[in-house]
Image (cartoon, rainbow, N blue to C red; front, side):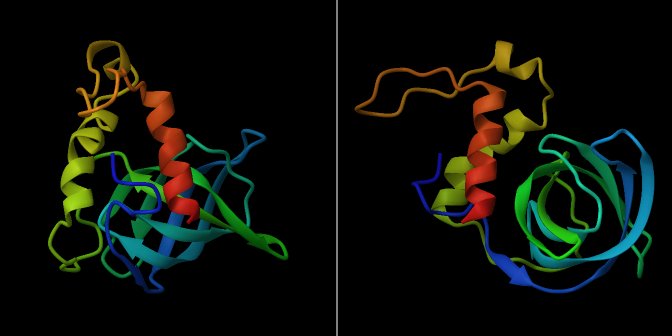
Length: 157
């Protein structure tokens, strides 16, 4: 786990036109042309006029390349008027949607890599896998739900 306050990867402020497809918190399907506000190796910050909930899965398609990826809402990062900013993470950690060469992996990213793999394994992975002992601490089996809460905290800071 990266130390508190350390991100999994660099953020690049960049607006890219996207199509967001999914359902809102009331279960109504939507398709919305919107944009990113920040990019990372693992996902993005996006703007939407729809109320979304953490853990919700969506399809995100780039308007310029038509490349798409499944994403998970990590959390609500803020609101401005009738639009919300959300952090989203790629469901497949190998996704390269942005065609950007991000800086090499930092030590904190290398530490986080096993968790990224675990997150990509689905909900049953929490029962099958644990994160190993951290020297000087008692053994903790980190469940997928706990990892997602940490993701929300990382995305918010």
